[in-house]
Length: 287
Length: 262
Figure 1 (cartoon, helix red, strand yellow):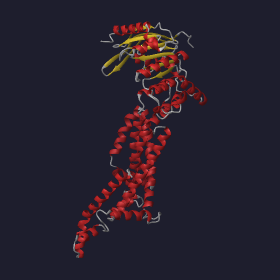
Figure 2 (cartoon, chains in turn yellow, blue):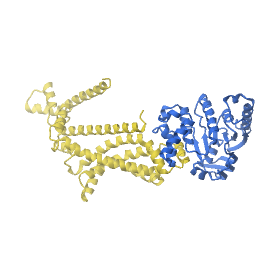
Figure 3 (cartoon, chains in turn blue, green):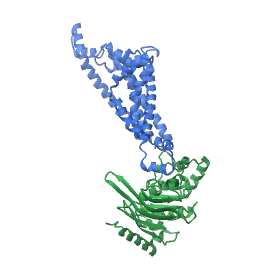
């Protein structure tokens, strides 16, 4: 109870603020509508209207809850209106992108730590890749890959990997470099080979850093997958859901998709955290 | 192999100059030294006198820029590859993700000892440093003194002829240090290893060594080598004897001659 109470308090505060904001943001439309219908604009009439508009500027929490429930449980999960189906489309691209990005990040980090040339050449490019807005890159990746006949999951996964390799790269480089001069000298005094130093010293030392960056990377992967669904009129995935919602002013749909994405990200990060605890415990690093 | 009482380490005019941004630094200059099989040699002197550098040079962790240095008749680097040294640093440097037994097995894994051989050796050196029941513990479950004993066990596990110790007890309190000094002498008597030992402490150097190398800084050099007349078996009480005090005085004189107190 002690741990739940603060969380609940914050949640209630957010919902309260949200209701107030919904009332004021939707007030303008409500006033106009009541005037058109010739209804006396009392507070209760206005309030009821702001809470139940079809296309509100900001939908009230219960409207989003209904939209979410309908999207998650109210449809067959194979239906194109099901958030479970859209969520799965996005999730599969996210996981594929996360796998590619993590692999690329770790391989580049290993190269950077072992080769002076790579250390000096790769890092600036990696940083530069992240300064290019992903929204500008995404359509080009989709278009270029579509022109060579690759569509569907892979282009999205690549955009997702574009965002997720970077935190893995930075975290892993930092982690692989944590062993100090003394530990490397010890390895040298035992005449250890570079691969023995890597597998027995550098990689285990890097594990806590690796997991911290994996948590950032999986959230970034999800963002990448959603961004990859925005251009070229995709019809499947949470990104497509966001886009079509904004085309038709379906704010409830937008918010429902947003919350699904947020919940998905939360679950993914929790999952990594769980794997982290398990791994570190097996390694004897958790106390 | 070297003859039992023959020289293990021979240094003739060893120079080592580091090139730094502020110009060359003479870490070692004209070092002549002979260490015989079974010697316990302490290197003592103030910070910057090159005692650690000399130890590292013997272990092939640094390369001399001049002079001749042989270990077991080989170059230091050849000796390193022939696993001639066990090195012990001031910090235990145990891996937190390995148990004590796994930590001690680490150099054995690297050197390709068989699994059965590893287990047998780990058990033997654990008993040697009096950590018999602690093989399954993780480093953080042990006190600082016990961790350092584990790191000594690790250095002993692969039967190197030479044990090089760089202020191994420098981070421990004096009571623990006394006990470990006693244990180290006992271990030395039982294994007959040649030991090189860097320290800041005059009593520690006198208590442990058969040979005390007094060094002084700028440039790092040997000012005096004192052969200890103390017997090889030394109870802690020997530190109150006249002989002990006389050698300690001689060491202090050596340090003063090298302007170590300026």
